[in-house]
Length: 242
Image (cartoon, rainbow, N blue to C red; front, side, top):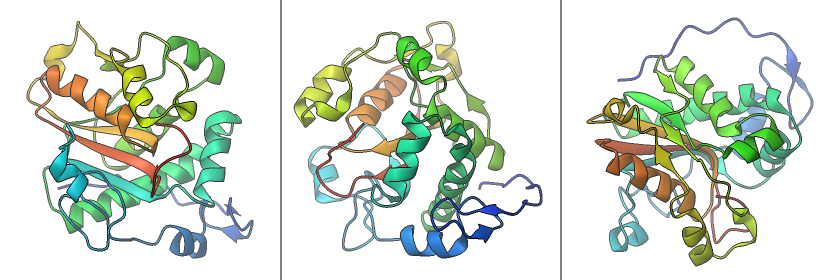
């Protein structure tokens, strides 16, 4: 079972969506309107008519991860907020966005009880991309979610040593080819993964090519199970990252 760490009393601030004063960066009204729970496939996170452990696509082509948690669909206002967070230097948005992901993880654990992960990881950026952006948005989410849930976070167990082409302009098949050999487990710390359950955090899940490849690497390195925790999931065939 997950335990949430004690939170500090919030300071008044403007909601990032409606700009009204609230106790958090996203007010309750906007969360209720734009992040209302909806039925999803428990394994890949795609919207479905009913809450299902696996959708037809996952039954046909089983992903290398056991469960996906997502806070919302990649639509307004999450697309705008994630773009600002990821590409426009709005690193402070990690705080309200991580709070949304934390709430989604807690709700998922209540709906489908399972063992909590032993560690929380982030989908890594290549050194070149990290220098360009200044921070890894997935790690900014992961470390805050881990802290809120009193779980250990590991920044470097999963690495991305080589830069690859941006995923956004590629087809599904091209995305998969683009990511082959993109990730690796830290060769000096592979024992830290052996037999452990891990959660892998990213901002957006589109075709799932990124998290599939990353999860496959973690499983080959000895992880017993991998969960995917993403802030947003594209509901249909994608037009943007990951």
